[in-house]
Image 1 (tube, rainbow, N blue to C red):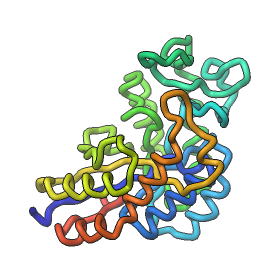
Image 2 (cartoon, helix red, strand yellow; image 1 turned 180 degrees about the horizontal axis):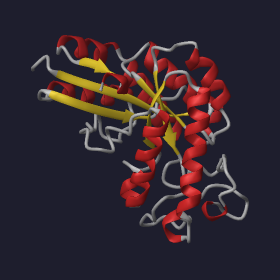
Image 3 (cartoon, rainbow, N blue to C red; image 1 turned 30 degrees about the vertical axis):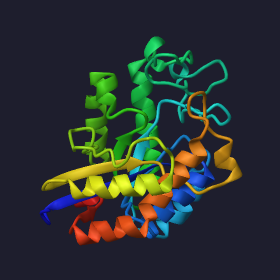
Length: 263
């Protein structure tokens, strides 16, 4: 193992619920996460700002959001983006259609490019005003919005330049490690798989992305068809990122934990 291995551990979906805010914070303070992505249209952004602005060492990304996937909690765009919402004014559940999922996808409606551009601008403006440590943007539910529509890549690039942010290195090819298989959702299995995968990394810079959250009744109420056990998935993710064995493995292998700012 070379000491030239750098790993960016990214905790996604802060702002979406209290459990996610607390989990992302815990993963940074007591685990190996170094960057946190915040979803600006969501209800728990004020709380996220309160806890993360007190800790400027935690890198913050504006997690650009055009979908609202959960069944029991919804979020709306920050702008009057009529082409992006359902009859209730909520963002649609999906960006792109999925086999076996009958929910509406943005891909299948007549969405307007100017409305997406205005919404991205609003989310970034609010993000840099709200979070002192905002350094970059990332994409919710897609590797990069340029993959959804190439013109969105140009819009995001221009906005990043205007606001002094970095466009997502993951979206531009930073290799992602799986870390552990999605199932079984057991901490011991995830810890073992993560340590094994870390030991097999060659020299280079990698990213690991997941969604840590604390256990709570709130988290247990989230989910959608096919992902009813979101609570077990996300709190076992948190336990894995905090695992003493994972932290010992990172140290033993000489892996340098970095944030987006270090790129």
